[in-house]
Image (cartoon, rainbow, N blue to C red; front, side, top):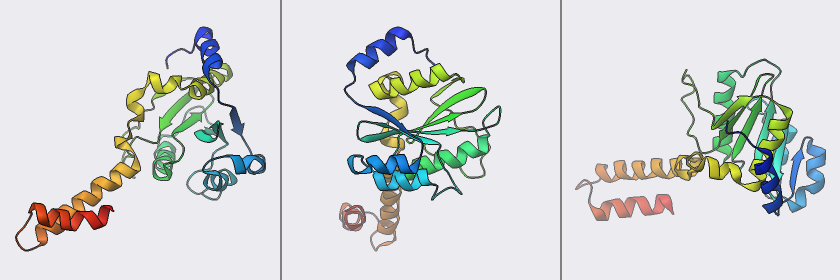
Length: 201
């Protein structure tokens, strides 16, 4: 992980106009829900409605927008299979851009813009940031998220080409092409346009 120096934190704290708040309980969250974007979805997630797949310990808001889920595990290291499941949830939900996972030994950060691996894949999902777990480091990380510094440090990690909506559009275009190929006359500009526009509209 890139070190978050005191100078960087001081500068970031001075330039950000947004209020940062970490919600750890659904009741606390619901108290502010009227002023928060995506409130109902985040409330249900924090309440544990999707606990079979993912239940965060907290959600970080910057201003009115959700910025990160925080998940703490009680083991020394993070289980890669759990990461596969949680990151897929993050990607499918496509509301909160970051997932911070903290174990006794390390902190990892994942984004919602990384296309998930296959469910049975043994391939490791690379975090955008990874370091030794430390309370001060976590607070610095939250400040970097609040100030937008993390997005400047890792711009490629937030490329929306990997987001779920782009994935769906790509698949719809592929389906439209297959339907056009099946029509009499094969693919023509007219067939492709006629088939794809209703699907993407």
